[in-house]
Image 1 (cartoon, helix red, strand yellow):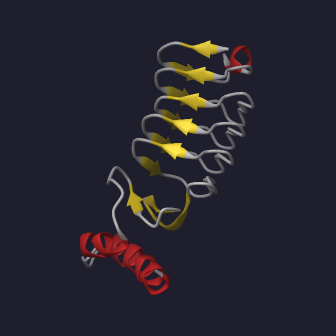
Image 2: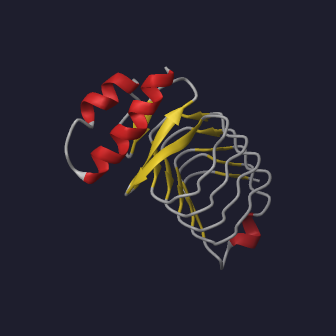
Image 3: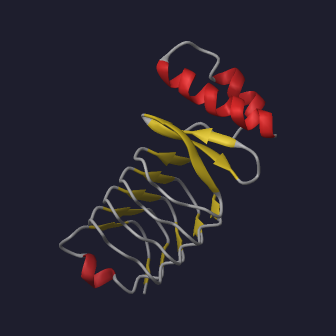
Length: 152
C-alpha cells in the first residue's frame, strides 16, 4: 500500500497501515511496538513510539527523527536529510551508529563522517573543532570523537 502525502500512525489506526510500502510525504509513528515489514521508502520519518520496527526500510528521502528507544532500521542505507537521535538504543547498522549520547546522539556514519542533531555531516576534525567547548555535551562528544580520530 502506497500513501501519498503525510501520514501519522497511532495505536488507533496502526492496523490499517500494516501493509504500508511507501509514503511520499512525512511519516510520524506514534504507536508503540508498531512494525512496518513492507515499508521500503518514506519522505521524512519521525519515530516517537518505543520499539517501532522498520525491517525493510531502505530509504528516507528527508529527515529521520528518532525520539523513541529501541527503534530498529536494519536495512536502512540512505537518509538524505538529517539524522536526529533523541533516544538511546536506536539501531541503523548499515549507515552508522550512535557513538555518544547527551540530549541527542552523536552519529558516526559508515562513510567516516559524524553528525549530531540537525547539524549536517562533517569530518571528525570539523566536529572536534565544532565541539571545542567546555559544556557537558561537548566534553562527551569530544571524548568519543578523539577515539574516532585515533582510529581514522
